[in-house]
Image (cartoon, rainbow over all chains, first blue to last red; front, side, top):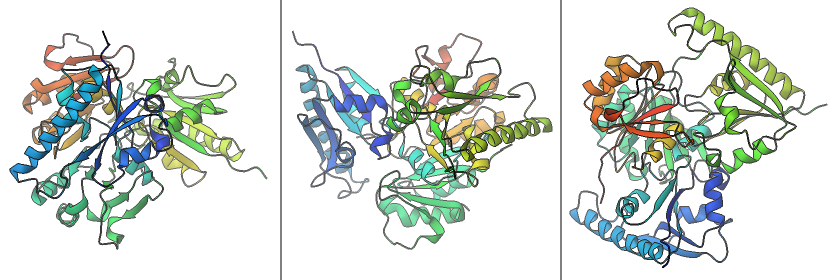
Length: 243
Length: 243
């Protein structure tokens, strides 16, 4: 009888391959099967990060999102289409594991922190062995890029998604010391307004492509571009106690 | 003329040496000088993590805290004593850098996330070259240990220090989806009360020594020990949108 393989959800960190963990590096350089999410027609950010270390003989399973921004979140079809997609790819990963293969699922950032892998994990965990390797979050990459510590003493840190309503964002922004905002993209104008009404716009930095070669770090109030890429994170530093 | 050396603030991650980054591992295995904080009379957690990979010939500079819990935070002497301590060790690190030595400062967790290194960084950054290597946070280690994702969809994550007043803790706890509480130690009883009044006690987990061999993961409501160690993190998972 074949021994069931393991599905490894492996966090790659913020983007620089040098910042993945020793364990992630070892799992990837020894992988026989890798899987990764990507938008149809793109190489995929996770796949890109491992470009130079993936074994030549590895079997690749790209998991192509059927939708990303084409259907609005509020449309019931959005959940339906995504759910079906997760079921399909989960089935493929289960088949691989049950035929004795170990599979490394490449995950941007930390797998359990707003990660797409969680949708597979929830479906796989009771069926086949699953192991998760944590990683440096995109936000750690971003605040390190600003060359300024994010939290001191007993600062409160709040992490917000740009997909939230403006009033909700503003309300949380008013009450926190340190702040991280992710999923900015098409929510950029709304996030700016929330930072202004929340009184933190002048303290905010935007980091694009943190830790990658095209990284930029800009004070939000000095930003001139109209377009914000998907890979951007807004950071407001805490100012807590410091002897 | 000697070229000035660089001070590297290197995050070691949550505790398992296998979870440090490839860059951190390389810097440490090639280090000629390392510095690390510790309580007098202890080996030091950061030093412990690198035990098996530190070169035999490395020069070690333990930076021993003059106080940790002996003087209350509210006492003005606390800041004074600590400030003097940071000045002294900063001076030593500057001397090393100015004599051409590179120094690796070993940091638990991520250096810019509530890290002691930040107090050195603030004093060094305008004087000698300083580079910071981000790392997997202790909280990522903790939520991964619970085998349950921390944040989904547009969940709000709030990170709180147990040193905050109970009413403040409770107020933030009521308003968040996902929650992390650190610096628990002697604040344990207060944190428990805040979780209860904030309505999240039954959903809370406590992770001790995350990713280390003595790791434990316990539902807070099922915890029987009276003593909480310093290396513990409380986690409440978000329950956001999931297709």
